[in-house]
Length: 483
Image: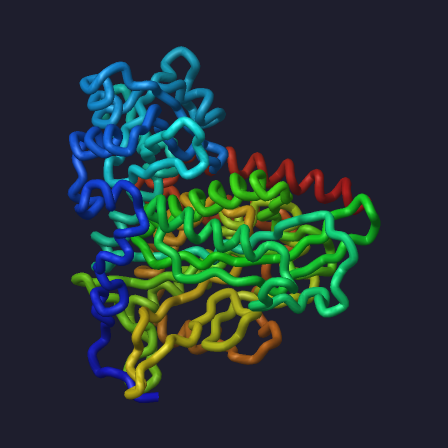
């Protein structure tokens, strides 16, 4: 394959800044300017022009779900104070077990103006903004997953000399009670199926439209492989779909995953369907992964993964080595349910051993094919795909962990030789370290590698302790279920 000798892809060539993309958002249409140029006064104008009634400050809690604090602005000045300065909240309730005491629990939700959107599900006309968390002293709250990810992202950028961007593949199942099933719909054969052979197509397309409206960049959506027919009149028929997002800096990529799940859950209620992001909805059927694609960027250009002569770019080399060394302990953040292990070991296309390859869907890390033009030049960024996480992922902690693993990769000597030894493009698990088969093994790895995540104060020790406690409790439950 012919490739440019230049080691990068110009971001402007793959992410055009055209009016078509901006036209999806009601706020962008009303204000006529890019998000990063918005001010609180711009939002006040749009609030009036769009006849909105409330403000919602949304943020990521300690359990990895979106929270909200709602306001009815009393007047113009009150609106500006909310949007610019935020509001206090009870940190001990939002981050239980994190070391925030009930006696000194006040924290502040600090809105990020560029994240504002009109809530597509509110009947009251609501302006929503995503928030970070700060202490009473105005410093970033250490226990916040948003803080953890932003700190890890910056440290990697400063130390490795590149920004790391990511996108999540959000796989999910929708469940519905059907009448007579179609003879043309086969189990686990739904990849790219179209209506009428899938019932979740309208929901998925509505989700794509809603995500575009709120500012979540999307690559595409489609029906996925998984399908589990109802076995009785009181059971649901489940089918699998996927929404693949677009590359963004790590903090925004994590927010986009949670917003995507939020949109899908709201739409499932409207469509009177059930939705599940669980790793497995029924044993023996395809599970839901949460693969993350990673792309390093320098000076506004995505760097190539495969360089001239078939080698691996130095940034990609760093990422792959870090993921191979620490990918299994990252399961503490990316594979958080006991059914995560069912997904990995029931014989479907999921990682089985610590390997990487260019084509191997059973490898921990894969280098997927990138579309090219007539001359063989890449027309979209090349990525490093981490295939281990699933639908139980806490995206902020996982991406922070990946950034820390990449930083640790800087200390790995002879990375090129290490990668050569760990590579396999065969569709069978390679010899070597296997994926942990239970929560107890993940806990042991996290305990052994905790200093990687705690380096430079990124992950608080209390958070790692809490994750270890959760994993060991899960391990006890897994042993009881096996009896």
